[in-house]
Length: 133
Image 1 (cartoon, rainbow, N blue to C red):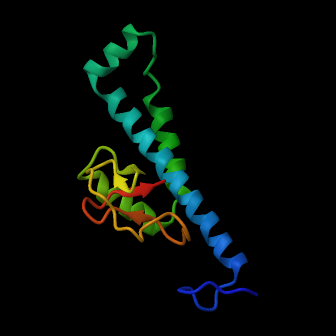
Image 2 (tube, rainbow, N blue to C red):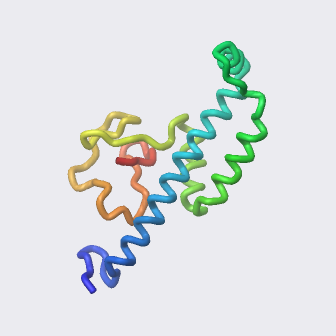
């Protein structure tokens, strides 16, 4: 079995499985972030009235909160802790990277920093937000 340098004793299948787990965690926190933004908008009376004028109904806040609970149940405790810590500081806790630049704080990430070998979630070294490519 081939073993990748920097990850001694781990087979390709093990790395792919862990990478798949990280993809699921990243997808889960993206869903959680979207739900949190929708809940915040629905709870804001001015935003809710503006949405109602546009034809969107935001009277189902309980359903959004239930969906949020389901989303948090699918995350690992470490991922959820990181997300909740970031939520105290930022409205957008998960941001994209474009041209090696964090789109949350616009700081260029180190050259060797990439999404390859996604064995863990990556955070910006400047603002601490969770990054995705």
